[in-house]
Image 1 (cartoon, rainbow over the protein chains, first blue to last red):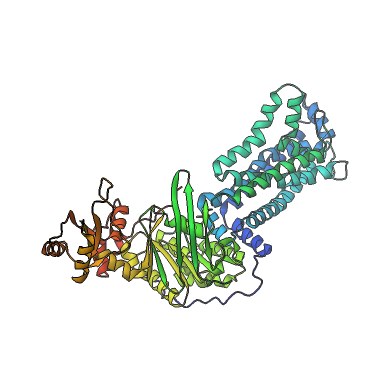
Image 2 (tube, each protein chain N blue to C red):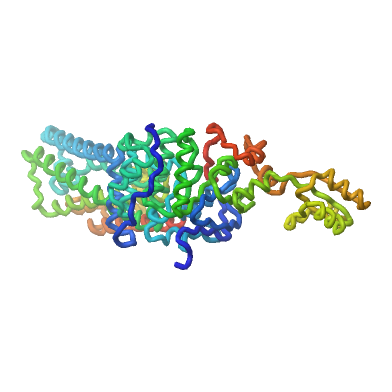
Length: 281
Length: 340
């Protein structure tokens, strides 16, 4: 510790400018927050590595085993719904990193106590949550777009000798953009649950449970009602938009499914904001 | 706004956590231009009260305003109020500079101001280090830097000297005195009577969430170091005259409780300025019957002692405070954590 200087007279003149807290300032502050902690970098790094790595691996294995006996179901799916095959494996696992970061963007504020500093600066609270959601969604959008397109072009080039998949084919561009949108909304879905639970481990457990544990359990229940429940689960509905073509058993169209996922997320975000202004920080 | 911009007013503030009443119909005001000490034992509700003033906690009833506005109504909160509430209100993975930078950005303060406050608290050399590795004293300095960021005219400091070395304690005291001299409101909590005796001009004393006393520090020390005598007699009026004539003072507000049975067979008087033997002699000289003659500590001190009974170091605080003795640095204790 250096020698403490003698207190000096205050040096900040009354700040000029409008008195209201501009939303742009809050966006800048949230950007500073999100870029200045290491969990952001590590989570996004994990997302890119897992998504690209697994996708390329799967494409390489499919290509290598193209003529192996018993591989025909894969070929059929690749022809009718190429994006489900291309994105399925890598993003199925990689999306968990988005879930974790989405949760941590808000829960670390609570677990570290930084939320109190944040709310002293932005006591109306909702603008802070909105700025946080916008900045996180923006970062998620940029990283997801780069990763999804990288996976698309890497995987299609590996598979080109067997099957030609291009963005101009029906449904492929929509599914690719849909995959990006799905990852953005998934990030907000995780953020909302993090804001409701305010505890990192518990919130991550819940998000991962909803994303990968609950759907197969629900699908075990026989009957058409269970089939509809399964179809309306947040991520099951949300992932429809990343499919090239409707599959038998889908209860919603791609955009309907995406709308259902957005509705889940909107309700949770609304609840998150509702509690944020009512709970003690 | 009609009120002075730096005036803090709490009106009937009440905060419960479950069944625990942390703050109980607490009303007080904190004036600009002086250091107001917020004194009470650990768990008295000081931190909760400060959090209520800052809008972090919501009271069940009552209001807290700064210059007539609630915290949430302040147009640019960090320019009005600088608060050091908890030393660890920051992300350990973030650098000191980035912690202050995001706070500055919310208010539209230039990044230059961040470097200025880091210089002010002597953390320039570690500005880009992650705060997780900071000592308690460095974290406390960073908290003070955050409080000073907006050059506010109200400062709320919850146990600011906690964890600081003697030099740091002196520095904080000097800073608080200077800020008050500049006309700002300085509201500083402590559970140490001695610390407040040397720092504060005015004291607000609470215990178990309730107001115990609100007075100037000088008056508080004077009262706390005075002894009083409880006298119970059926001829209270006659004795009161004798006592007054002999230079004693009957405490007006402190009506002594009745006898155990509840029937008021004898009125109690609380007398200051005369020792018990002298009062006994006065009564004997006029053949006044005394039922009880008990030397006792002043009511204020008694209340404070009772509330601080389980906290150490208070054995002789009144006499030390009266001498203006400075507490040694080792007497600072870990800051209280708000009741949750």
